[in-house]
Length: 370
Image 1: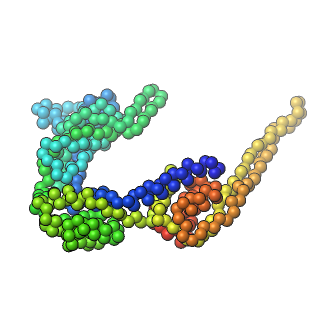
Image 2: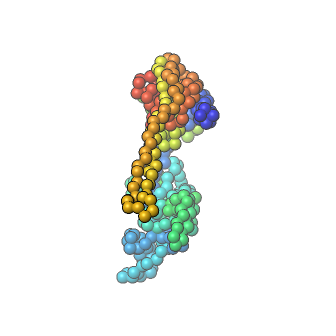
Image 3: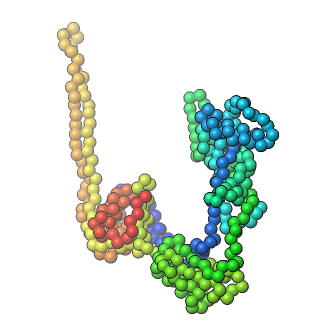
């Protein structure tokens, strides 16, 4: 039992060293988002053609017929009153992210997802599709050959599917046609938004920037925001100022946190997690019921009936006791892992023990269950 647990313990100890390494100074650009420097989501509705009989069924997806008729009419083909029954086209949603400072003519990646009953987009080609932002304006146009993320094979009595063949990507499949109206060079102040809000980290960012440019350039507003006076940096432009600021090293403050995933049995414990004095006992209880009925038949030429006599056996077994283990107050991660290993528990049992310790008020950390 303990031999099987060694990889789990080794993984948890490795994660502990990762947490410790993460506490070392990191670049400011990896800790914050710059206000105004953000991407914008785009979405469009289009048609994929050239599929090998894996497209939408027109009866089940009437919107595919409608968009196909609109495209043909724009190309000068009159299809009014015609009935379409192709299986090589599919209606799709096209999504993309417009990066900050994207200029007209820049290529961006797009994701294509089927919305009808198409079984695969493999080998299909997306017809020219405009991509709209939240304001309703068209910012990009997508077109190209789809790279699907899966495959499927079908026979008369069996079907095999691997991955998700009804979704794919087109690298550099869209071209930016409209730029976001944002003049970055006119900014006189800027806010830095922390990805993980924390008062200590925000204070360290304020101190680091002021040490670089002088007092008053950076002011901490709250746990997640630091106000930056760009004019106070005395740089030639906001771009030059941020280019220098984003490489300043800051040591982030890590919150004590335990994250568990019940589906996979994954446990991640931060280095700063502490356990108060508590006793833990763990064991397994097994209930076993077996049925072995016996059949009795009358002798040859004798009168009688065949009788089935039930034979059942029930038993309860309990694993050898692991005893009651005591965890001392102020226990660190390594001591906690060693204690759980001494109890001989499996990863899923570790999750239950950690939840019980948290419920008892002895686990001093944020407990996240996914």
